[in-house]
Image 1 (cartoon, rainbow, N blue to C red):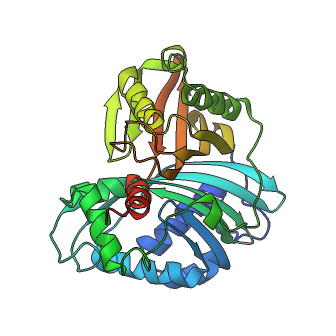
Image 2 (cartoon, rainbow, N blue to C red):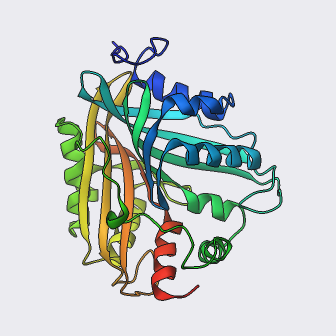
Image 3 (cartoon, rainbow, N blue to C red):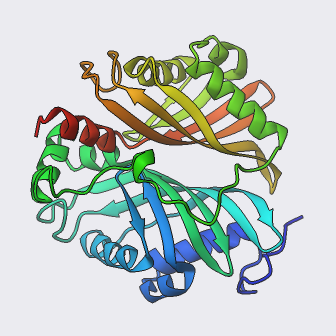
Length: 329
């Protein structure tokens, strides 16, 4: 059984996943870029680890530039996890597996013909047939590495291309956030509560939670397009992140639990780690500078616990914070 599309949305969309995946296909694969004026609200707020963008015109320009550089880009959707936020609105968290070939000049230089694969996780609040609020995490590190660049060198060069530390795009932090129309925290489904509990326990130092709550055959997907099996990679990722910022505050900002739709029981979480870079870990030598890590996680549950995990952060946005604050540019 499906849930029909909400009032105020074009009736050609059968339900929420059909809308989210359908507009993505129209914009990126059918090249109907003009539909961004309809599907993205004029005062849309898009928060990514790299920036905060207000208004749909900047998004339209960035979309055209990306398509010029990667004209064969495809974004098939793997899942849409969503919840009601009112009689005529919803919050979705969708997961895309993107592929593209570097065929045109642009931000990554002259065409190289390199083939890319990476994921995007995005939370979108939608009403009246349009996206009004968005939180998006792209696996930028995977793109940079597959293009043959070192992450830190690439970030340093990008800051220079943008005019240096005083003029470059500033990464997202809570102080740069813009309050949008959606201020909810998701739903109270037990699966969302369980997922938030697992991540919170891990980030408070109880890494034995991996043994207790993850299937020993768990499949995990992490930044840099890293895919692995078993509990050890899960432990390494979360420990590496936490050990880099051992005194930082971990917060779950949004959670959705969902069942049905011919999919496994699953949950989506949007979270952050905010505090000082005061430990060795994912980001190398401690610098002591304040960092904000924005993350999104999708989890699937099986008979023996969590059987699949997708977690994304943007490593390059974190390195940008470190380089700008240490002056190592």
